[in-house]
Amino acid sequence: MSCNSDEVDGYGNDPRDPSCICICLADRMLSHQSFAEIQRDCHLVGGNGTEIPWVNETACNCAGTDSPFPDPAAARSPMRYIGRSPIFTPYVGVPMRPGGPHPGAAPSGHNFHFPKDGACGEGEALGTGGCTWRRLPRARMLYGADLVAAGWDLAFVADTPSDVSHTNANKESFARALRALDAKALPDPCGGLA
Image (cartoon, rainbow, N blue to C red; front, side, top):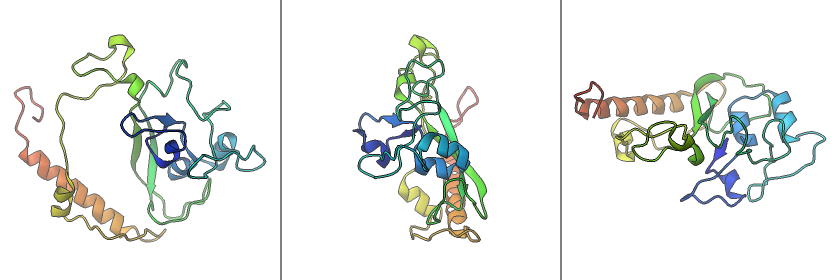
């Protein structure tokens, strides 16, 4: 799904109470879905021509349906279960076409969605009331200053199919910032990090 993004704003999203739609065209292209997958759900050619309000992007439906909104009653509804889609470099500043080609593409992680309808309450065990995911009772927080201290470059430098050095350098800065945070965390008596 695509959650709490510009595309969802067109359907009345509220960042204080985030909502989701089935994966939007931009996120499908970032995850390098095939043209056939995108065409099936997004009506790029010969479809109904609907567009998402606000961003004027081609609207996409949930797989096998005629709606951009997931069915909360489905057996494995994305409204209750965590989901993910792959992302690739080059990522920033490279024009994308549905289905590719994607010259120079390299796997670079995943976008995740954590739907509020499946969230367990603080301190609740998985499965309580049908919940499917929960936050751990402790969290690690990185601030922008932590990233800059680890070498993050704030300049915008567009990727190209043959040069993603700026993005890769910032990914390394992020990893350094996480390692620095790990070094500050106190050992947990149960063996994890505090």
